[in-house]
Image (cartoon, rainbow, N blue to C red; front, side, top):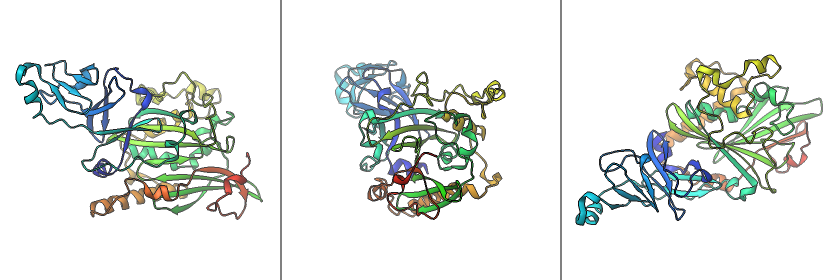
Length: 393
């Protein structure tokens, strides 16, 4: 899976706003490999191997000088393109000697409010043609957090609609929170060129159903209906980026293609750090931040800081890598089962040397959006126009 991701896909690693020109370099870990990222004074972003090519000191300690890093150990200077431009100890031989030094520099682009890296050796595809990439800054919001568990067990929660009946009950009274529904869902799954469409269907009464459709876009994107139908055009995205086998970087964001994004501070208070939304201080030792006093007072889960604190807390509680041979899966896990099969099929395709859709052209041809709505019994949720039938539940 690491080779598949490295050689085929753009991988987000930071919010654009988090990397400031002239600020200290940031350590970045992706797919078990360590890098440093920095923004030069001209706005360009460099992503280099963390270790200095000289004696392997960390360039996270380096000085940022104009558009380059200067290693504090021996003064070697590397510019934003990865070229070594100065080796002070070589004096008049500095330029000649520096030209011979190989430094791994990785392609970086900005899009959708995120910084993206391509770690492969071949030509990079275009940035992913996802809808949040095209909306103006006022119509999107992103957060980032480090989650201490395998990326897949974190990602699976985004396709699990059944947990809305339980885990997020404490937010049921919040006007713009994700809906908390009572009836258990049944799933209908549609294979697509890019992954899966997963419809969680709940009977509301003898005449109406509630349909909540999520989109799985391989390898690590999930679109959910977010605050719909209360905000009919509001969508959200989960991007689970593997750091290594036992940790991942989760980017969670909202976007709205109809206009400026409605304020989300009711469910993500403004005092939370968007670059560390669920703080790494939430660990097993403090029950991942669960507040038992809040539970006694009536909050269902005891995770009162945000909805994502609930998701991340239960996912980390499974352990760094969950042993799936011990799971007892049931009918409402159908979307998770199908997503796992899709990824296994993708890996087999990659191992066989067959082309992989790293540019996400399959999604570009059928750019489905997530939605949440009520509809009459018997309606086909796959047909265009169903979201327009929605009404608040």
